[in-house]
Length: 274
Image (cartoon, rainbow, N blue to C red; front, top):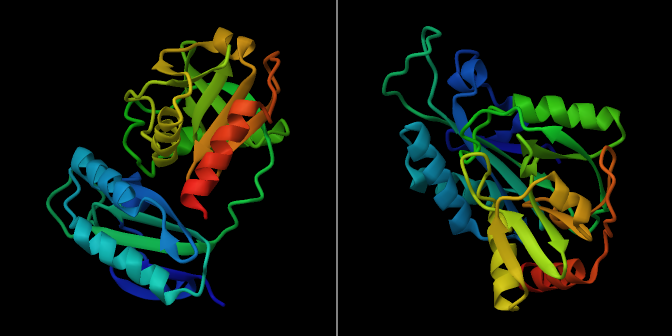
């Protein structure tokens, strides 16, 4: 079956989608996006994803109806035959006649595609600790991901499949995920800031932790906290909750299958995948 995509509301095979080279997404990464998972043909936390997309649109001053986005995302799922997977959906400021940093009011450009995906084959991660070289508004889910791309590929060359970023020693997040760690039977995660995306799965996991009344703290943490951690986790829409088995450039004593990790993973699966 050909991969399905949507462009400004029209669903077609992705091979038939034509995008202008004057798209501001193409020229400037002047666009925002969401990745929304679905299981047994039903979206997981759909409205929360839409709220975050709307927030990204507002922060970047891209004029677009969130109801149009919602309708197109639902249509793309309904026209596919997939039971489990995710939809990538992005909105740009539109198409220019002349390349210019300055923008004027124009029709937004909407594009999305759907992928089949299994959420239950996640292996522990091998991670590289790196400086956070990204821009200063990582709380916006922008398609401008060159910093992530460069460092993720450096990590891949070192045999890793994720990065763990820090800014001047303060932990931020992964290349495509949020981070948690366990120390002295307490679960920690860096508090939200302009350097950290408010992950949907992060939000879900924190709610589960609080509902189970587990020891939990949000704050500012550094590399030394990782050295003392008994377990480190990454969370994202496609990863769910997955443990880290090794940080290749940092000596740690982490366990990718600690008790608190398994408790949270089981509760997460039970709530969203049963």
